[in-house]
Length: 76
Image 1: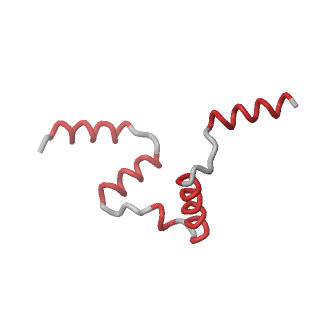
Image 2 (image 1 turned 60 degrees about the horizontal axis):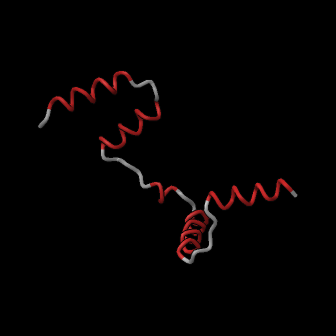
Image 3 (image 1 turned 180 degrees about the vertical axis):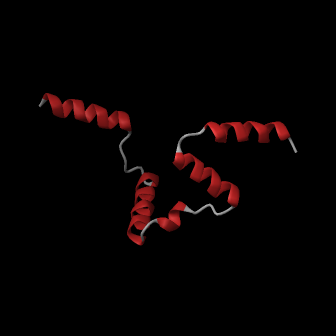
């Protein structure tokens, strides 16, 4: 085992002031990592599945396309 990486991690954790980051590290290291998908409602899961299906079918706009459309709408 590489102890220098452990020492480096200890130092980074000691310096960290972001509680959310510390909780995430704790969850990952303790093996209690939750699957975010399971925390979604059935409706939210269905919406994501449908959105993915639409993307696979090519039914979406890129960010650049949306920006161009917005510029056109502003000039009208």
